Image (tube, rainbow, N blue to C red):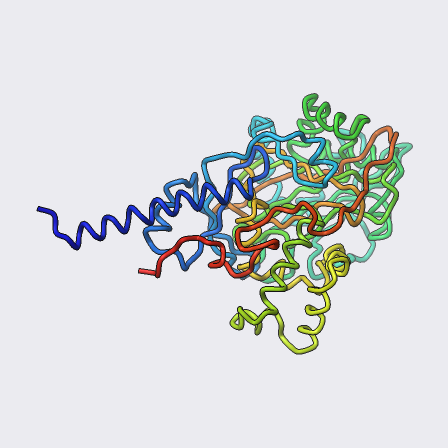
Length: 451
């Protein structure tokens, strides 16, 4: 005969299991993941063991996110993928577009890409390797004699010349100046830094694209893929030009803080977005439009400033002056956008980049995804105030390799919709109210006390 206490314990576990399944189904219905991506759920340490175990049963894998010394908690990457959606609508709204498993990972030369990271660590090795690789495509190569723009992060800059074409360059840099940070990038462009970052001269941009195919493993495969070219042509209305490539090596504990890739420029002839290809390893992303991120920030600020989260204020609001600034932002949506489009997200940098609870909020609200080798992520741009902001974490135990390319129109033909809708109109809602809640346990998560 079953012990009554055992029976009661089993009933409690069954109840927690049912609540977890119902809560997760409602969460995914209200906040669906990016089409084609597996859903992502942030692990809440306040969940009961039974509730957490029930959620983990639905997981494909679990990721512990740490970036630049800041712990951002755990994500459960679910088995279920987001439903298909018209990519043109997402492009117009500046929302992420995922092309899962678009490439065979081996076609992206992952081994060569990871070996290149080792080459970058020695200037002479990098110069020798680049001279040989670029020379096969008709480029001469030499060490750039100019001063490095960011001595704390920049490691080496090379200059390239091809007959009849503009001078181009490649620069190897650390992603941060933290001693523990080993993530790197190799950026290809032309002209002055930073004045010519938004270069609109098509012949120069084509030369930079040629250099990318000569230097970066996997770049030829991406640039010459007819299927990707066709999908981008459909979105742009004109054949694409993938140029100004950046190779990224995110290592454990590294990654990129929130940023966007838009310029204050007319869209015709400008940068239409970014194409990111995961070639080796896995990376975890937060990716959402300016409007959606501003909406999430507003909800988080209002919860924070209401006094419900006293234990966070010391880190996120270090002094009365900072609190006054945040109070002003919490009551003015347009000022929130003004800050988010600044380099480093301005006065909101601490919240969007360092607050684990805000990271968890964005994940629960459907703005997180994890890229596998062969995945392509398109990051559309419809103007400085209607673009896509993104943040990246390493989701592998070893170095990863990825390619990021500016999307341009090879034959600019038309303007695009830059309409910025009233903030909050038609946004996804959480069960706790109009805005995403900073207070995780107000999400009707149905958890019991920790056991």
